[in-house]
Image (cartoon, rainbow, N blue to C red; front, top):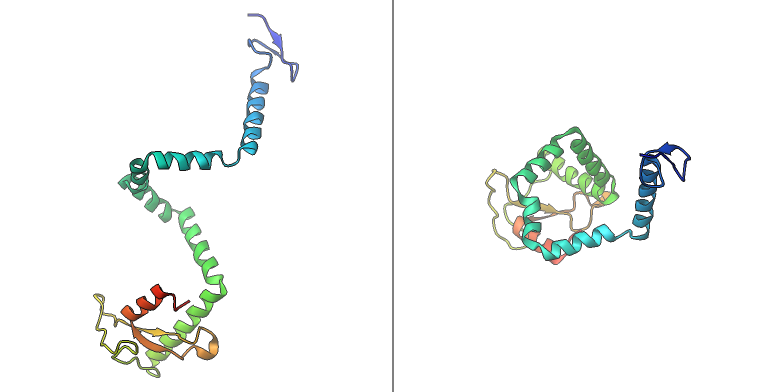
Length: 173
């Protein structure tokens, strides 16, 4: 086969094309990069369309036992644990989460010390909430004035059912 000279780099090669393998590969990569820059949402739109056309397959992808096992294995890996720790650290760093944690810890400390005694009745519905399957009482301290330090111990004791109703209505942060 006759040898040719590459148009881009000037090397001799034995290909039918005008460019050597190296330059042809680089050119393809450049073209692909330009195309991706010109069409940034192509993959997202393609996946969205595919999911609409294949709803059953789409639902089955993440629910297979193999997929669950892969996710579980990843979260137990060093990388997964590090990501989980980073997420928890970022969430705790948010000021509202820090305030809530401090207020709840203050109430728990006072209850353990015996200086704050939770009542047997819910202050909203007036019923006795009982105990959960794990033995814990189903009554919660509601920081109705907020989570700022002066109000840490200003709580109303409500059952988990009333607390859930407040959450659903949107009466709580």
